[in-house]
Amino acid sequence: MASSRGRIDKRQAILDGAFTVFARQGYAQACVQEIANEAGVAKPTVYNHLNDKATLFRHAMQAAAQTALHQRLAALEPLADPDPDLRVTLEDVGHRLLRLHTDDRSCALRRLLYSEITQFPDFLDIVTESGPHRLNQALADRLARLTLAGHLRATDPDQAAEQFMALLTGPLEARTRMGTRQIGDAELHEITRAAVRTFLHAFGTADA
Image 1 (tube, helix red, strand yellow):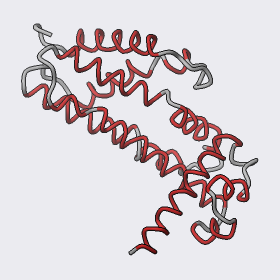
Image 2 (spheres, one colour):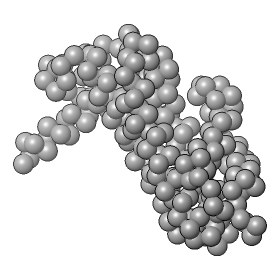
Image 3 (spheres, one colour):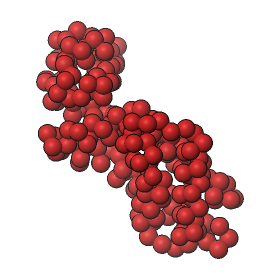
Image 4 (cartoon, rainbow, N blue to C red):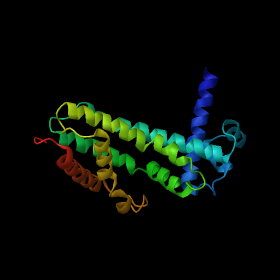
């Protein structure tokens, strides 16, 4: 059992180290020795776990996307038991999502996806399935439950989820200069409030 646990931990260290190096260097410039150094393992150990650089890149990207997804799903939890003033809960959730969307690893993940998509066209399916698609499904489910409880007016929950995420993340590419500029928490709150205000105008009940 200990041996199995150690192998899993070592593999995770390799994937974390690989993502760090790929984010810093890009795929072409990254080397396996540097990844081994970052992970704290010997170079042959990297090859024992993942056969080659391309396989390592795919698995590192997938692992990073899955970690980002789990964090975003956790950010939706307040919607399960919302404040009587739904705006408060939506702003809380929206702000959590924006902080995750603008953290260093998320920005690096998007930059790597954009820069390497022509060489690895399957990345779009890998990252989308582990990211926006699953997040929108979970958010749509939460919004559908809020609709049944009378907090939102009856509408297509999938469309409502898409619109909510678009209102949140739409301004970010320009404001962060495609992830190269950090924006402060006050600005994230400003974006969140504007997004929630517009969302409730479109999908809120008369009370909301």
